[in-house]
Image (cartoon, rainbow, N blue to C red; front, side, top):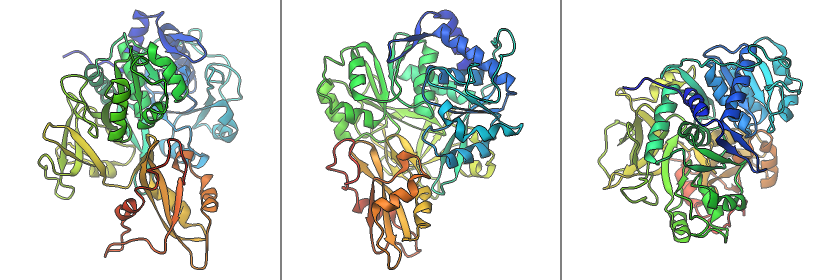
Length: 526
């Protein structure tokens, strides 16, 4: 068996092997090579060491997408730190909770966010640094008012050593949440990241010859631990976009080979007249995940381009679990394929844990080297999510067809995935329920042609009240990231309940399932 290696060590080897090759191709025409990225990694590593980061310390990152942000990720791993990527849409309250729970040694934010966070560096426990989209800020020794600005230490401000991490050592903590709304940190190890990346490189035939269109955010699994890690380990190149713009992606298709996206990408591309077989002639793979892709969009895309989108299934706690085949079998619309090499999946009865036969719907469980180490400082919660034989209980509902393909039909909990991002209903309900004109609320996800799912709030007004939908939305907007905002509010006299008093959200979802069926891509509430 080959000795274990890490993402940061493989990247260092690629930078020596391909120093002049472009890793990042940027919208302004600039390229950033492997060697230039490696230099930035060494500089940031020196800075983090000067800030007091030691192996096992957390480094929180809430910055806009840039090549330097990827360098910060690699630098953190290089010195044995644990990366804590934070959604850039988080409000101050959401960020405060995560920082308070994970207790990072360093918090890196965008320069424009510093006024809201400069108080954090007043004690000795946390150092605040800044990093901008152009490499500006204190992290690379520039200005910006951070507490650690000044001359970088060490050999010209470079750190050349590579931390020798083992497969069980933590590499990152990604915060996810349950229906209680309490975020919890999923601890991903170096072994998790490497094993999953190697399986995907093989499954999708991803090599140094690939040119990826990267239009995803880099604060979650899909954008960072799938798209970026695969590119780094393969020695490939990325057209590195700040976000998704259909016209820009169409422009890049003739020069690229792979696009990794969420269903929203494909619904918007289908709205472009320039999406043709000719524009996709150099493309070999379109990947979709993070939310369900409607079968009709899968079929429409293949009809327009000749390419069948490859759907896969993953989650924060496991990385990627299953994939439709690259070759050797059909890519079935509405399915997420078969387990990756080394990964086991099964569908079980939610009460007994008994494995169910193919065709029956139950809870999806996963076991393999991709499955996370546990929730940060929550041993009891971690234990409750695993079976005695090591299978992780995902909470997703699915079934396996006669060909062994997995289909996801829903979620045991009421998680909403909108545009590839997780929305937890309880968090929104708690804010609505304290409004003086609201008696109670239920937040659900319903199908949306652009976002896969979107958020709807069903509200029972307080006696004698007649609240306006826009007033309720304004009242909660400041506490929630934009993607969590309900796109429609519906008022009812009472919420449906079972004999035990539990709100029947399935009934609400059925009632409002067609709310956005005729809405065009990008539409807001009707």
